[in-house]
Length: 333
Image 1 (spheres, one colour):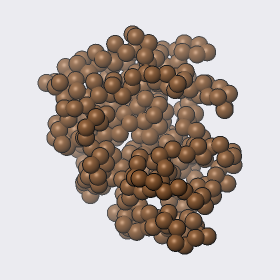
Image 2 (cartoon, rainbow, N blue to C red):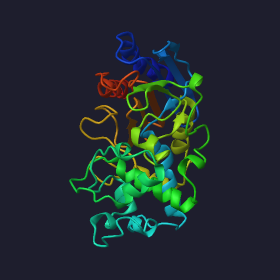
Image 3 (cartoon, rainbow, N blue to C red):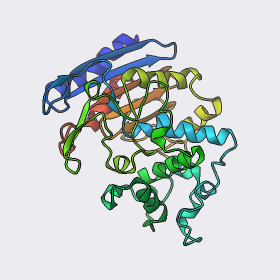
Image 4 (cartoon, one colour):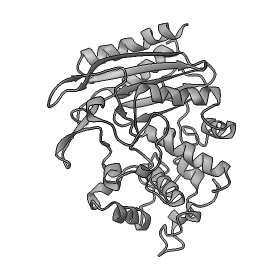
């Protein structure tokens, strides 16, 4: 089936959700390994305080896609250069992590475990509620006695990996190059709005939605902005091997658990890519309503970018079901 026909099939459930008022707007894009790109867009980039239409090249707060587009490639590049050893504790770069207790379990966590979310860190922690000083909050994360639990998806893993990148670069993440076609913020007139934020007292447009990333003023787990074309260019680079080394791509595709690879997810029951993906697919989602899935066997990738948290996250947008419906449409269900 051609990319155009796949796009037509996959767009139907997206258009239905927009028409039903479940999400304000969306951009859906597909790319093949040969560089062919197809996109579709509709709805509103912003509803309040004034409506603004979605455009094909609207910039999105990519949220946790930052983990796979920016942080994972950066960490794997450091490993390939021999700067870090993925199986060494992250204290080799962050020696001050829990340094008042040299036997603390946090000091034994490795780079690879953080990439695969195989650590005991909690799933959620409202770091932003502990203050507004980004340097003090970094110290808080490093010195906090974290309550250990089962291995779950945790932003703390990638916050720490972001600290690693910062420590080695001797710069804050927001001072580093975000990558071709990406940035750490966006012009409001060009960006999809996210939440009417309770603690920042404004509708967020072009500034990061993630509370902890905002308080840290940049982090490894969120904060990246970009349009559909940049996301698809990144995906094409992994499909054709020009965007990362063969070893980095191999690790991104190598399972570390029943759900996760190095940075990414792979197909499992109930996953975001739907029930009909092949075994050679990796994907990831972002809280703001974004997602990217790359099918190495089929030779194509797709991204669904929405502003489903606008004007509030406290609404059942049905984004999980929509992502799966798009994936099933692309994969022939």
